[in-house]
Length: 196
Image (cartoon, one colour):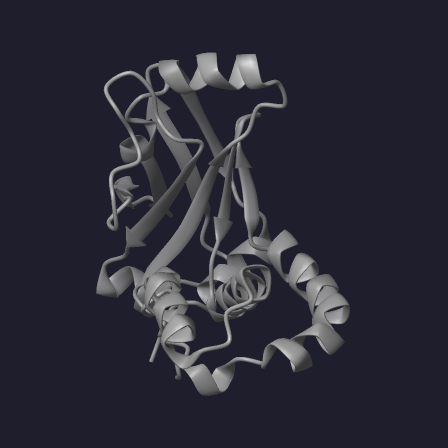
């Protein structure tokens, strides 16, 4: 299975502008099956090759990047967010509508990114590895965006199917929630695993 993106996988800026609206609709529908809420203020978006390709195309468009080295730099930045076959990778968003409320919450949630877990069936909780590229928290506040990797055991990867309950949760002292994900989301993220 082809995992990482290369320059040949991307559209030129001109070609992308022609298909952008239809591709955007496709990606929004795809993302909706790969997004879960944990409580009222944290959302995980599970990334895959399609979501990352779209993100890169949007960055190239916004930044008007068309030179090969610039494109390669974007690929090098975003390719690590594509699952490797034995893990799930997710963007974690802490969402509050009001800025003042958000700032207060972020100061109360320091370290939350290290307390996000998944439980598959009756196995022990498996905590995510957060922000491998750079630290996004300080001692007095966390970021509203984090990047998580859930590294699964080989037996979990091999034996996982949509009939097995998958629960994601957070054990932070100021934010404790869990959610049992639906079959549609399970089926979508199971496809990220190399079960051969």
